[in-house]
Length: 219
Image (cartoon, rainbow, N blue to C red):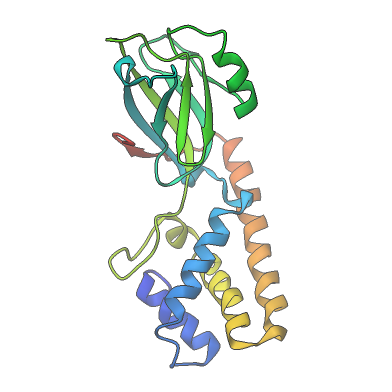
């Protein structure tokens, strides 16, 4: 069976399990597979890169001299963060939260140079002066656009639907108390993950054009 859409995927999972009574459970298996994929470094590949921009304004600095902006909801990890008004390579340096606490004590307002991500927010240091605006461009690995009845496809389903299939089947096994199948589905899933990582590595060094999903703003 060809798996081109979310509905195809649900039907194929049911066929593989030889069960037609799991209509309510299969979407959960797929969601669990997506969560596993999002947490798996092997899927930090070119197709998952997103570019987004946000305008920051010094008037939003809080009373303790800290400046925070929300990270995109689909953010996983950073590739590059830069100030667009400055010539390249105006990249901000990533700090740990401890380093940020130390640097904050000795840094005045000015052009942003550092950032630290904690939870759903990102602190920028130094904060922009009041009345000054800068445009930040973030290039990051984003989460999979989640599949659903209204979101029938995404880049991974288009590229390799079997990752979704084996991921969903892997998460079905504990629910069905079918421990014997866990090793089978896990082996197939891991084999695909390794092949995708290897293919992405080859593509990066073969001159292939990188496709980046673009969002106009992440606020």
